[in-house]
Length: 335
Image 1 (cartoon, rainbow, N blue to C red):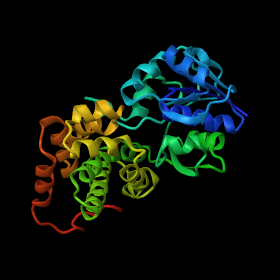
Image 2 (spheres, rainbow, N blue to C red):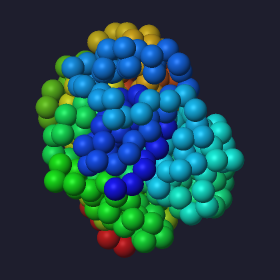
Image 3 (spheres, rainbow, N blue to C red):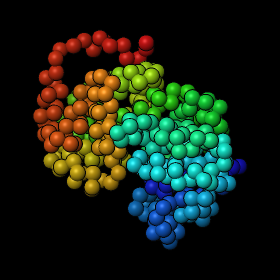
């Protein structure tokens, strides 16, 4: 058994801590907020985010980031805006060569860097990997069967994480295409937000299916332009994550999109739902696509809805009126 430090006691961090605890690892679950730790201790569950799911005393709650010093692996499960600061916060405690498993999905604002790059810069002696794929925290916390991808250019580091965390309820595949895996996790949030908007305006199943399919195409288009393998987007970190995020009410991106499509302002929708990574990723992905010269029409319309007050119905009309083209004019799944 190993010692696992989980940084971030949101729904995903707590779910992974519970899973590791069920595997009989020694688990430290860290939060920067004393009141959050006190609440979980008092009620024996994370009432706000995972009500009804017991957090046993064997999960050691703490606000002391030095818990990473004795860890055999560290799971970084903070929101995207806190990844860089949290990684820097533990730099003085982390043992050389410790696997650091980033589970946040997104891109750093302005720099467009993937989070393994951000974490790697802050923790140069760590073995940084990405864990991504179709994995609602609400289901992982309850032991619902889940399959996910661990990505690292250093395959041995990904395989080490696979050995530590894979179990009969949590199957882990390994890939060395870390670019594709991370971009799939980041970009699908934008498409899921757009899918929720489709639901909110009552566009129907046909439109939503088309949006998901063409959304996957533009995800792959940007990914391959940045060095990813096209087939990665047909896997768990691309298609798999897109399906689960666009189709479930567990998805905050979809729920926020439904509110926006129903007439709420994007800012109000985000404030009501909570952390909506797709809202922030829409701006980053749109600017990145412009920077590298890749056409991403759904991402562009999502950006204009979120940041330029474009009406969702107008955005849908503009997507439907785009110039005629052949579906297979671009090779999406193989070079």
